[in-house]
Image 1: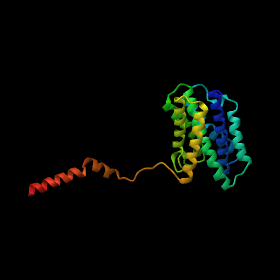
Image 2: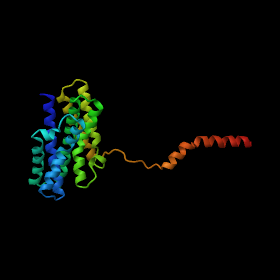
Image 3: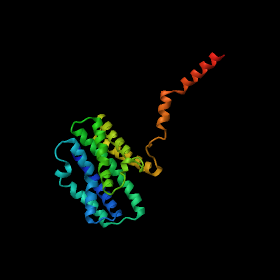
Image 4: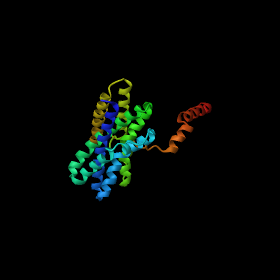
Length: 234
């Protein structure tokens, strides 16, 4: 199977899952049908649109491939037709979100490498593809995007998955191998991080003036000066 075909399939899987997640968010916010459409499409296509615009390698795939928009709408439509209980939501949302996050990180890294860019842009755009749609969706419903923390490891998992894809590609492994490794490892890590509450550290509690004061006047020098004064007194 060609790399382009694998990347497109992964992209479409992510589009459907994120369209479903966007529709589920619209249901929880009690939006109308138009709200489902907007949130579902933004959630499903946002990350890929941002990636393709940054790559500047022709029009975004979401606008040229006739499958992208209907699949995003199909995901939102499932959420419109089916109501999930809170328990089902908590189980289903995080599993689907973890899978979509990893699938899009892989697809974004693959597409970036395919246009001839290096490993660092591939990791950056793989991460952007994974979190862009969800972040835009969260902003539309006026909540802090999950990418900014408080939701277990999120963007860091996407960056890891994109890096795994880049490493496998550099080693000459088949695309399917890098894709499988990235999705399996990333999904497992994301779910474990959510269940155990793993998060990246926030801001430290050090007082700036204390740190700057110690840097300008180290305690060791003060002690030496005091010692010299005592020796001179004797």
